[in-house]
Length: 437
Image (cartoon, rainbow, N blue to C red; front, side, top):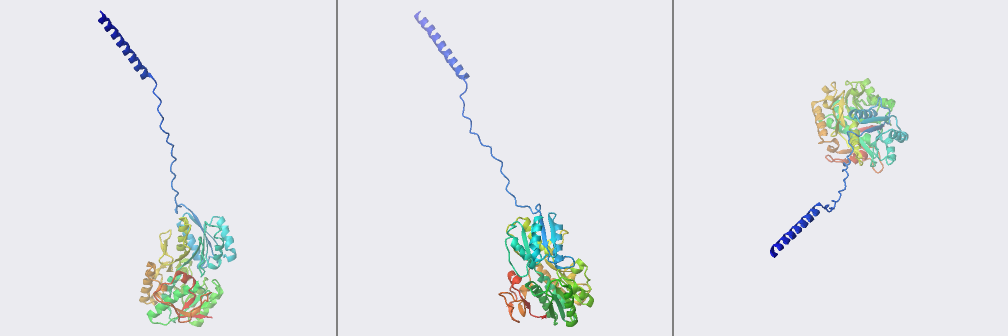
């Protein structure tokens, strides 16, 4: 009896405990979960900025402004510069060309500032005497390129560029043709005035004449008479007539800018060798019955170099540009042009030799013209490197640089002169010319 009662109470106790345990478990399960710590908030990252791109030459624009020292129409020098500006504007849709004519040194800066205010990015004076004042305002306009043609001064600044083409290379080829054509043995040059620029160019022509005369075994005299300035049509005519009538010249050329010497050659029925432009093909001056050959200067090759540096955002451009036949550019019509070349009536190279003159020129000279032109284009030969420089004893006295005595060998054959020396110190005529008073 006792044991049965004990068992019943025990079972009842167990049931009670079980119910309490179950109830506690239910309460625990139903209780709200303890809050968990929220993950750290990751800050939102700003999108990466695209790297700053260099100016795009295809999308940037530029205005080229040329200050011409003379009128454009009827001149070979300013005419060639004007043609260069037009060709660049034609090639590049993002390039404009503006200009001023008859600019003297007193007008260089006012005109430049006027054109800069109107948007000019590159301003060039096309002669040294009136282009040099631009150096005085270069620092005031650090984002503008300024430029000036080199006569003998080589002053530069970071954004003041000096330039000139190696015209002597094409003049050398003209000298070969002129020497072959003369029957009297007398060639005349109507020249502006003694300067490093003029003397250097004439010396290229002289070397061509001397090489051809030696090859052909003929004696050739070269007479040079100075006018006193670049553009004096009346005085140029007088000197040209003097060379023909008094010195029996039958091949005439010039280092001046008017058409007067050509007029005299046409009237006298003698051969003429042109300067700076293809005067027959470009201007229609005379014809190939008078003009045996010309050399053509493509200033656009030098301006194109400057322009591309500007469009590329170059802050430290090349400041001395002395480009030649081994440098070129492609025009809008696809024509490749070298900085200088021989031309006549739209033709280039040996094809430019007048059809009327060609039968008078021995084949060995024609072959030499072709060979030397190809070598200069390839950059493998240059008349100023190949030849010795022997002084004629005449020239231009420079401060610190005297004219070497006649017969002095200043540079041996095979030695390449520096650009600086050619551009600023070549102050003497080469042996074999007569300077007329």
